[in-house]
Image 1 (spheres, rainbow, N blue to C red):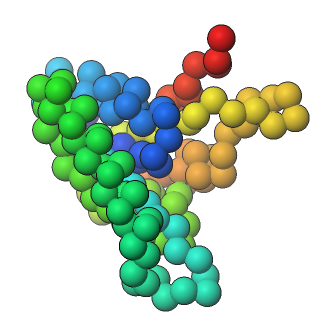
Image 2: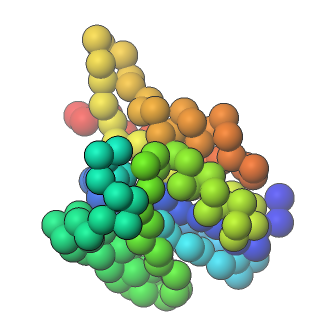
Length: 142
Protein backbone atom coordinates (compact mmCIF):
# COMPACT_ATOMS: atom_id res chain seq x y z
CA UNK A 1 0.00 0.00 0.00
CA UNK A 2 1.38 3.39 -0.99
CA UNK A 3 0.47 5.83 1.77
CA UNK A 4 -0.12 9.45 0.83
CA UNK A 5 -2.27 10.59 3.75
CA UNK A 6 -2.72 9.09 7.21
CA UNK A 7 -5.56 10.19 9.46
CA UNK A 8 -4.69 9.66 13.13
CA UNK A 9 -7.56 9.84 15.61
CA UNK A 10 -6.41 10.66 19.12
CA UNK A 11 -8.63 10.78 22.15
CA UNK A 12 -6.43 12.13 24.90
CA UNK A 13 -5.51 8.78 26.41
CA UNK A 14 -2.19 7.23 27.41
CA UNK A 15 -1.94 5.41 24.07
CA UNK A 16 -1.77 8.65 22.02
CA UNK A 17 2.04 9.06 22.05
CA UNK A 18 2.51 5.50 20.76
CA UNK A 19 -0.04 6.06 18.00
CA UNK A 20 1.62 9.30 16.88
CA UNK A 21 5.06 7.65 16.83
CA UNK A 22 3.63 4.73 14.81
CA UNK A 23 2.12 7.16 12.29
CA UNK A 24 5.51 8.84 11.90
CA UNK A 25 7.14 5.46 11.23
CA UNK A 26 4.50 4.54 8.65
CA UNK A 27 4.59 7.94 6.95
CA UNK A 28 8.37 8.37 6.72
CA UNK A 29 9.22 6.01 3.77
CA UNK A 30 6.58 7.50 1.45
CA UNK A 31 6.71 11.02 2.91
CA UNK A 32 3.00 10.70 3.59
CA UNK A 33 1.02 13.54 5.11
CA UNK A 34 -0.26 12.99 8.65
CA UNK A 35 -3.45 14.61 9.90
CA UNK A 36 -4.20 14.17 13.61
CA UNK A 37 -7.78 14.76 14.71
CA UNK A 38 -9.42 14.97 18.09
CA UNK A 39 -13.22 14.74 18.22
CA UNK A 40 -15.32 16.44 20.87
CA UNK A 41 -18.64 14.61 21.11
CA UNK A 42 -21.44 17.14 21.63
CA UNK A 43 -24.45 15.95 23.61
CA UNK A 44 -27.75 15.85 21.73
CA UNK A 45 -29.35 18.46 23.99
CA UNK A 46 -26.79 21.07 22.88
CA UNK A 47 -26.36 22.75 19.50
CA UNK A 48 -23.62 21.15 17.44
CA UNK A 49 -21.64 24.41 17.40
CA UNK A 50 -21.93 24.92 21.18
CA UNK A 51 -18.89 26.51 22.78
CA UNK A 52 -17.52 23.87 25.15
CA UNK A 53 -14.52 25.66 26.65
CA UNK A 54 -13.17 22.86 28.89
CA UNK A 55 -13.44 20.31 26.07
CA UNK A 56 -11.90 22.72 23.55
CA UNK A 57 -8.99 23.44 25.91
CA UNK A 58 -8.43 19.72 26.45
CA UNK A 59 -8.60 19.04 22.71
CA UNK A 60 -6.06 21.76 21.98
CA UNK A 61 -3.72 20.27 24.62
CA UNK A 62 -4.08 16.78 23.15
CA UNK A 63 -3.33 18.01 19.62
CA UNK A 64 -0.49 20.22 20.85
CA UNK A 65 1.13 17.24 22.57
CA UNK A 66 0.79 15.22 19.35
CA UNK A 67 2.45 17.99 17.33
CA UNK A 68 5.35 18.12 19.82
CA UNK A 69 5.89 14.35 19.55
CA UNK A 70 5.96 14.65 15.76
CA UNK A 71 8.38 17.58 15.94
CA UNK A 72 10.71 15.57 18.20
CA UNK A 73 10.51 12.81 15.60
CA UNK A 74 11.65 15.22 12.91
CA UNK A 75 8.28 15.46 11.16
CA UNK A 76 5.39 17.87 11.01
CA UNK A 77 1.74 16.94 11.32
CA UNK A 78 -1.46 18.83 10.66
CA UNK A 79 -3.96 18.91 13.52
CA UNK A 80 -7.70 19.44 13.51
CA UNK A 81 -10.19 19.73 16.34
CA UNK A 82 -13.69 18.50 15.42
CA UNK A 83 -17.07 18.75 17.12
CA UNK A 84 -19.62 16.08 16.26
CA UNK A 85 -22.46 14.03 17.71
CA UNK A 86 -20.52 10.80 17.15
CA UNK A 87 -16.73 10.44 17.08
CA UNK A 88 -16.71 7.48 14.68
CA UNK A 89 -18.90 9.28 12.14
CA UNK A 90 -16.65 12.36 12.31
CA UNK A 91 -13.54 10.24 11.79
CA UNK A 92 -15.11 8.41 8.85
CA UNK A 93 -16.32 11.66 7.24
CA UNK A 94 -12.92 13.29 7.70
CA UNK A 95 -11.15 10.25 6.20
CA UNK A 96 -13.44 10.51 3.17
CA UNK A 97 -13.07 14.30 2.81
CA UNK A 98 -9.29 14.17 3.20
CA UNK A 99 -8.96 11.12 0.93
CA UNK A 100 -7.01 9.27 3.61
CA UNK A 101 -5.28 6.03 2.68
CA UNK A 102 -5.17 4.86 6.30
CA UNK A 103 -7.01 5.64 9.52
CA UNK A 104 -4.90 4.94 12.59
CA UNK A 105 -6.63 4.59 15.96
CA UNK A 106 -5.31 3.94 19.42
CA UNK A 107 -6.97 1.64 21.91
CA UNK A 108 -6.01 1.96 25.55
CA UNK A 109 -5.74 -1.43 27.23
CA UNK A 110 -9.11 -2.00 28.92
CA UNK A 111 -11.01 -5.05 30.03
CA UNK A 112 -14.67 -5.71 30.70
CA UNK A 113 -15.84 -8.89 32.33
CA UNK A 114 -12.33 -10.30 32.06
CA UNK A 115 -11.98 -9.72 28.30
CA UNK A 116 -10.17 -7.05 26.31
CA UNK A 117 -12.65 -4.34 25.43
CA UNK A 118 -12.77 -2.66 22.02
CA UNK A 119 -14.82 0.53 22.22
CA UNK A 120 -17.69 1.46 19.93
CA UNK A 121 -15.68 4.15 18.16
CA UNK A 122 -13.00 1.69 17.02
CA UNK A 123 -15.65 -0.85 15.96
CA UNK A 124 -17.67 1.71 14.00
CA UNK A 125 -14.62 3.15 12.23
CA UNK A 126 -13.54 -0.37 11.24
CA UNK A 127 -16.95 -1.06 9.74
CA UNK A 128 -17.60 2.32 8.07
CA UNK A 129 -14.22 3.62 6.95
CA UNK A 130 -13.68 4.20 3.23
CA UNK A 131 -10.00 3.21 3.57
CA UNK A 132 -7.74 0.85 5.47
CA UNK A 133 -7.94 1.01 9.28
CA UNK A 134 -5.21 0.10 11.74
CA UNK A 135 -5.94 -0.06 15.46
CA UNK A 136 -3.00 -0.02 17.84
CA UNK A 137 -3.88 -1.66 21.15
CA UNK A 138 -1.82 -0.65 24.13
CA UNK A 139 0.15 -3.39 25.87
CA UNK A 140 -1.35 -5.08 28.90
CA UNK A 141 -0.01 -3.70 32.16
CA UNK A 142 2.65 -5.89 33.76
